[in-house]
Length: 463
Image 1 (cartoon, helix red, strand yellow):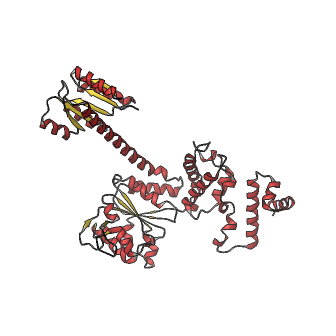
Image 2 (cartoon, one colour):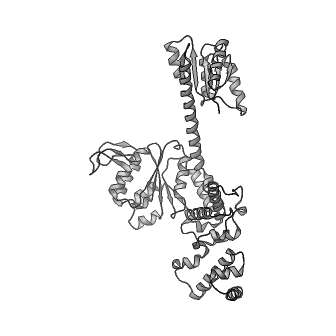
Image 3 (cartoon, one colour):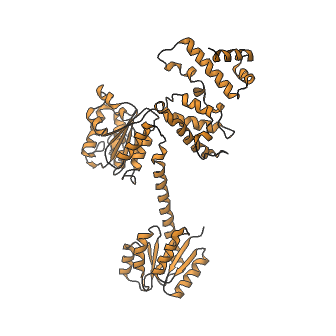
């Protein structure tokens, strides 16, 4: 698509000359004889017409001069770079132009090459500016509440809490089992807060010894340990004015918890091996797979740090406690991964049109020890191996199709006879579903005679 340029000059010969030159170089151009007319032209394009990529404007014009025009454009159309031109160049005008926000300044007469170079610089600036805005919007869209799927009461309470705490600077503690979405909640808090334009730095505190984690969090100076050949800034320093997400905070060594507490209280720290006090204006969002209060009672976590981290606490429920959300989550992930695969039947609405009821039954019956993350992995796996464009029982992993058989070790106790009957029932139901109710094919994949299958089916029906 050709770049569109608006030329504003009260001298007709200048307008015609510039328009002819730029048109010959492949630009699309429009011309105006004064600033007021140009503002009307810009306003007319608010109806959806292609907007201008660059404005080339003379300074000395009747009614509204270039400086007055520039002031209005910077307020109303801040993404459009403006190049000011004049035949009466002064140092004062050049300084004024740049201070008021002109992209650049040209003195007449200027060469074709000079104009072309400055226009290309302005166009590159506009492209980069629009791309940065697009990326920022994409990031914010990614972390809107709509990506935290759930209509259950527990999840609605989580959404309400995120919305309440996001605008504040309070520390937040997110507690929940592995796979419940703690990092996604942390991201939603950051990207819906006043700090959204700054970095959110993530740190996993799991299985790191004290020395490594301390250097990771606070950085180190040259020579502070063997191999420290250059200074390194830590995560707290990188997150200044933004947020830091401390995942698996329950794994922070007890002795390092003191230094973390000091950072929260005093908002400053020193790099490892350093003496300089470094300011730390950082919002802390922590996450734990365990109940920190219980760890405090066991002497494994400092109580003072617990109270500072848990100013606001958000408890994420496991998926087994909000199974009514499974259909919506499954539909969400199905849409996500079918879009990547370009399946012939893309998601348009409602899970009931895309997830067969027999598959949904297995999803609802399963306890999901890996929570939402496990559900997402299952849907991704099913879409990846699917060849028909419609999910089938055969796409399900065995752990869902025969959960009783594969997960019996998780039971505290059970009746062996009832367990065997239950496993047999599930296997027969799986075989019949897989074969569309064809008993001959079902008996073949089970490796038993059809008569034996019929006997077992009768016994299941009439126990």
